[in-house]
Image 1 (cartoon, rainbow, N blue to C red):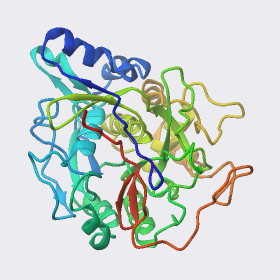
Image 2 (image 1 turned 90 degrees about the vertical axis):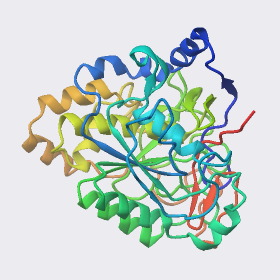
Image 3 (image 1 turned 30 degrees about the vertical axis):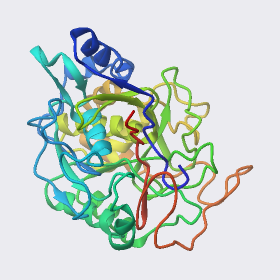
Length: 381
C-alpha cells in the first residue's frame, strides 16, 4: 500500500463446512504454536483485560467472538453497516487474533486468539477500503483516530490496538494524535501499532507507530524472517507473525492473509496477557518486558527490521513474575529510548517522509484524514 500499509492481503478462503475444514483453520494458526500460546494459557488467558480495537468495527455476533465484544463507539457515523459486505472485515480479523475463542464443542473449531478471555472494545475510526462512503470519510473524519484513542482510555481500555497507519510520502506527526497517545500512556494504557507495510515500496515512516511510547510491531514469516513488505525503521519494538495468518470475517468465512496489522494484534494479545496477570504494570514496563524477553534477538540486541526479536509471551510472563515492582520501575525508565537511524532518511533508503500533510493520503490502504490505515486488505474471493 502506498499510504498506510495494506495489512492482510487474503490469498486463501477457508470454508469450515466440515470437521476437516475446521481442523484446517485451527491447524493453520501456526502463530499460536510459534508463540507457545497453550503454555502461556497455563498462567492466564487474558481475563479481566479490555483491548480497544480502533479499526473498521467488529462483528460482535461472530461465533468466534460472541460474548467477548463490549459495546463500543462509532466515530465515523456513516458508511456500511452490519450485513453489508464492506463492514468490519478488518476490525473483526484483528479482534479474532487478539481474543477469538473459537466455537463448537470445547471451542475446538474456528479462530483462537492469543488472549481468548480478554474483552474487545470496538472503536470505529475508519471505513473498509471498499466502502462507497470512503471518500466522504476522508473529507470529514480527520480527527477520528485521536478522538478514538481518548474515548477508549476514558471508557476503560487497558490496551489499545492500532492496526493502521499513514506511511504516505506526506506522512508526518499529527499533534492531536501524538497528544492522544501520550494521554493514553499517562493513564496507564498500553498502545500497540503496526509498523507499516511499506518495506518494499519506499520504507517510509508510519504514524501512529512512530509516536514515542508506542509498541511498534514488524512482521515476520513462520521461519522468523522479516516479511519483505514490513517497514524497517528506528521505532520498531518487536516482531510478530504477519504472513499466512488465518483470520475470521463477518461473512462467516476464514481468510489467510498478511501484514503488520496482524503482527500488531498478536502483540496486543501479549500485552493483554501481561496486564491480566499483572494489572499494576505500566505501559513502559510492559514495553520493556516485551523487548527484553523477545526471542532470537538480532545481532547487537535490536535492529530496524525486527526490533528486539520475536515477541515471546511465555518469557514475558515469566519475567514479570520474577521481577518486582521496584525493579521494573527502575528498568522502565530506559525503555523508551530509540535506536537506529532516527526520524530522518535512513541511509540508502529513498523517499523520506514529506511534512506537508494533505487532506487525505492516497494509497492502497484505508485513508481517514490523517490516518491511512495500515490495514489487512481482506479481498473477497
